[in-house]
Image 1 (cartoon, rainbow, N blue to C red):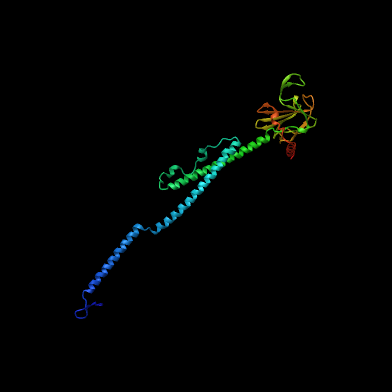
Image 2: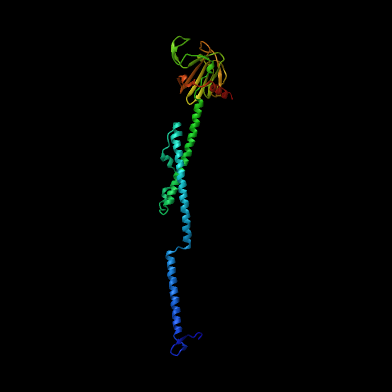
Amino acid sequence: MLFRYFRYDPIHCGFIVDRKAPKEARRSTLRFLALSIGMGLVLFGIYALFLPEYDEVVLQEYNTVAKASWTELKNEIRELDDRITMLEREDDDHYRVLLNMEKLPASIRRGGSGGRTESDWTNQSDLPIIKRGYQDVKVLWNRVRMGNQSYVELKDKIEEKEGMLASRPALQPLDNRQITRFHGLYGMRMHPVYRDWRFHHGLDLTARPGTPVYATGEGLVTVAKYSGGYGQVVFVNHGYGFETRYAHLSKIKVAEGQKVKRGELLGLVGNTGTSTGPHLHYEVLFKDEWVNPIHFMYRDLSQSDFNEIIREAKK
């Protein structure tokens, strides 16, 4: 036996061998081990039931970061939505009104096609936030696409309007300083040659022979020749339904098929054809119907502006 246990005997006043101590020591050791194992099992159970695993902790941290990022993204989406709404209002309430274009309905701006459909999310009930975010981004994307398409339409419309404004007759065919008088106004009158009442389809502008005659808008010369009562005459097709005619010229300075700009020289005032004196007979037609040229002669145009138009046409 490696170990012997002693205890004090007060009767004999000395130590004697304790034969029960080894058994008690073994029992105490066994109790201690059992208690330790039990406590360990209890603590492990508590840990397993209430404390997350390492992977779960990592996943929770990742989810926390993802939620913060998603919140930031939603704020950016909301800000983008506000900016797109402002652009849509400018489009509908300003540009389309000025250009006489119909507004785009909200159903068209927010509709669209492409991407995942609603049915793709049927079994994704555990992803409501992602689904809602996807829908918001999809709507924004379509609004951006429709906005871009709208601006292309606006650009085309502006170019069309610019072309119309450049082509529309909007100038006196003669320099105001060289006009001696207006006579033979548009409407019924006594014809100065045939001496009968008939409709006069244009304006007669009296000026000295050789006075320059200018195109009143951009267009294509369709007639440049001598033609009966018109004498030497030039027809200009301006497009958009407009045509102008310049008659009784002494000399023609353009050729048929030639493109001309507003303010470009067409010919010189003369007295050819059925005429009683040097003057320009000027007509305006819209969709093959004569209209009063006075409505297309901006007499409030300053002389300097008129001169600038003539200079630009010579370039």
